[in-house]
Amino acid sequence: MKLKISLAALMLTAGLLGCTTSSHQGVSVPLVAARQNAGQIGNVTLSDWGKETGLSFFISGVPTGASLPLRLYSFIYKGSCQQPGAVAYEMNDRVTTERQPIRGWTFSRSAPVAMPVLLSGDYSIVVRSASTDGNRDIFCGDIRQASTVK
Image 1 (cartoon, rainbow, N blue to C red):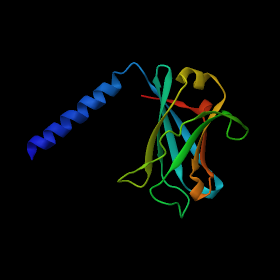
Image 2: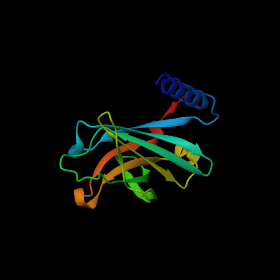
Image 3: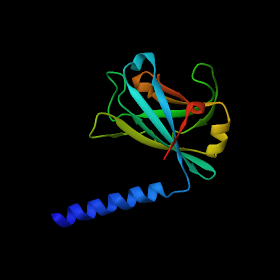
Image 4: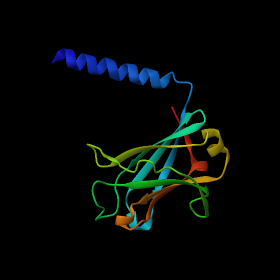
């Protein structure tokens, strides 16, 4: 048993050290819950993958009555949450999520655009429920309000 704990501690330390020595920093974008999802919180971390951007989402919840397994769609729009333009990137090759031991859901996506392009433009990220759950925008975050994650 002690060997398992020691091994787990070693892997955790190595993983954290690897993250802190990485030359690529992530960018955190807070997600604001829409009216029909009031009281929930969310965040997405953008990661520089060269010609693509990785997105790691965490949301605390979805509107009551959402069907399981939970399917969420994500989009990057040109423009802000207050004044969205056209969809710039759809990230829906996978739409499933993973329930977390703590209250919430996680899911990851990638966008076919370099992270500096997203950071230098006027873009927003939208999370939408499945059509079976009303096809509603449940979270939105403006990328320009992003902050660096260490």
